[in-house]
Length: 285
Image 1 (cartoon, rainbow, N blue to C red):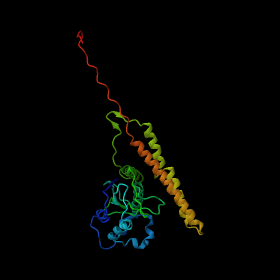
Image 2: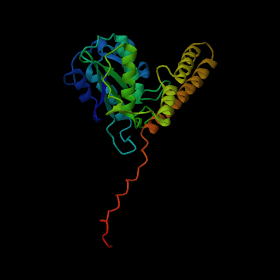
Image 3: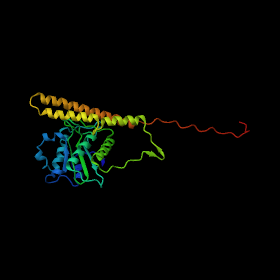
Image 4: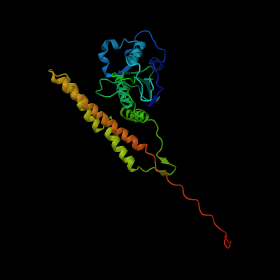
């Protein structure tokens, strides 16, 4: 699986049209299978029965809603292009994934990209669509529901690449070839920093790391408690959701620390001094 980050835009119509292979607006509703996943709070905007009947233009307008609500929102660098577009393609020899598998891939890539955080009730509008077999497009608005800008990880490409490798392993897809760890005949020996990076990455691993397991249990407990009768249920559930968010933040901090270790510059080695000039035997200075 090869993920690719496209240039951000001011409107969702162009990336959505690129994902579907035709221009937006498109008359008539999109097929139910075209939209595999979306941000969790979408249910508060519409009923499930209505989602399958939305046209492509309506999906684009929904993605652009935060631009209208917060027209002056911008990134820390002053960039107001809030529409983020990521696409991922399978290897030609890969099998066809089921709808549930595509939905899982969508959520995993959204989390790796940083615009989907478990338990975040004021996050980003995003959807995952498929316009052709073997390709998935994620489109998100980086303006959050509270009007703030969702900053993406500095090591975004590495995170997406790492998650793609894990998805390949989990779903038994064709792995992307990796460069050899040998340079000529000399094998690269792992350093202490490399070993520490591996430990931190294992702790922060979204699929099998211990923090991810604990966070999943907390999220499950919050969901169960929220459905219990009585006024204490929603309050306790909200506290558990906040705990889950803090655990996810710790995972991100550990992952960022691991990335920082891998990008530390190597110490510069002074060039050897040139050899002293020889003088001919018997020659006077």
